[in-house]
Length: 246
Image (cartoon, rainbow, N blue to C red; front, side):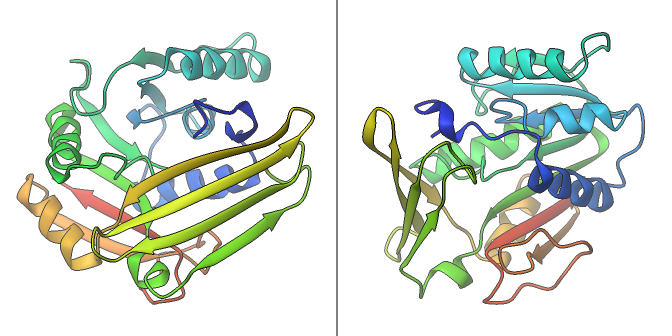
């Protein structure tokens, strides 16, 4: 949705910092390691990982978001070498690497309607990892969303300049979380929608092993919050965190 509305771009804020800290713990991310951030958007996570000492390549389909990411880095770090920003479709990633770690964060995985396309994303990422490469995903937990029809109000300044109302509905027949977002601002009322594929933990394990990962662990969030340490999955975890190693 960030491609359609600048208010939803996201920034390297405290939530993103917690997410990157958790990624670093899961993947044992070290200084100087090569990281591929797939679906990087405006650089919300890529910037923070680069600032931690990783050497990040951010890939996104949108040249506009990549320009915003580059500008955001230069504002924060005007004299430092920043991430490499590359346009590309996550199903057919640019031939670069190899990478030590790859990430698909902020629910970047599951955006396609066809399961074959989502599988192609995992294959494309795997092809760019080194022999001991690690992958970290964050995505919606169907155990949480399956029985919840939910609407939340975000006051001005929390996620956008004006009021934001977000509603979620789980489509059981398709295994997808449908989201409707209404923004109120100087330009009036605007509506956006998105649809994300969800997988249960056993399905994720099977999917990742199918594309060549030997070790796969699935963890839960602390309700809506990013956990400080790996937590077991339960029906109160809004997000699933997945660590996989080749």
